[in-house]
Image 1 (spheres, rainbow, N blue to C red):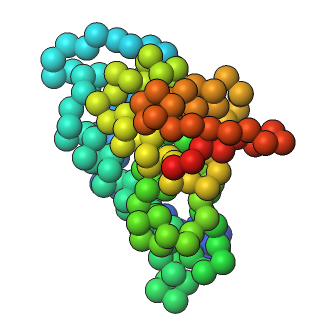
Image 2 (image 1 turned 180 degrees about the vertical axis):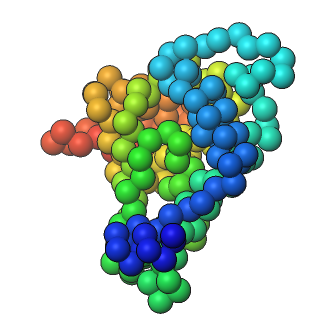
Length: 177
């Protein structure tokens, strides 16, 4: 199947183990990140899927690294990446990809698009890994948001949680990181 997807569609799939995919995408992303990003903070019972578990975070890191590694696998090694390529990353399921990509190839250009809400600082700060997520996102060369309000929330998080300043010029806002 992989060879067919590559040959016919130039699509380089990652086949995750079903249990890993469930824990990362359904449990961590949908039960922890998605509600939080939509300004919903729930009190979860100990041991429930909606309760923070460091194992799920480590699996999220692992899956993000897998995607980053594949995206940067060179054409010569059977991958999709050529030296002049850029990487475009979509949404909160892959927030660590820019970090792993820059560590592997500091020259790569990375764009990141948030397709969902970015929460206010007051909500984002409840995440135990808030600093790691912000720093990973700031490894991107460009970050886009659907609404200015979400960009403003991101900038406030960078300012309040990391002490970073931002500047505006001709409709673009930059953060020095």
